[in-house]
Amino acid sequence: MSIFKKLNKLLASMGSSKAMERLPVDTDIDKKTLNIGGDKIAESKEGQLWVGIQELTGYYFLETTIVSILNIKTFDGATLLFKGGKENFELKSDTQEIKSEFSNISNRFIAQASFDITKDEINKMIKGDFTEVEIKFKKKSILLNRAVVVK
Image (cartoon, rainbow, N blue to C red; front, side, top):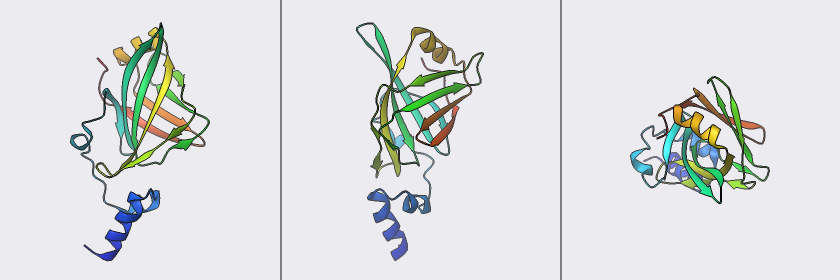
């Protein structure tokens, strides 16, 4: 291994997104990230979105895990925009501080956030009434295509 590859790996492990972009992309990270809970509902070259529903005293939350090439760091929360169905719908994050952690296993950043969701919106997700999911935070966004129908 050349000195530059070793340096890029070291910088990427310390959180440098530019160094991570120079490393070869491992597109088969499903097997490496088996400890992620929930169902994968969206994916693209930029990342993956894993979700699970949690109920707490009659309120519903969409617990998400975002695996991405982007380092997400915000104190203003995020939004999920579900597009392409009969009607687009948007979810605002319940979590305001979202910070990614770099994963050496998948060579990606992993962030977790909780979003407020209603029963109607849960039903739309279960039916697969969307073709794309856009994750917006700060002035950045990640566009993902629907992967599977949530069960």
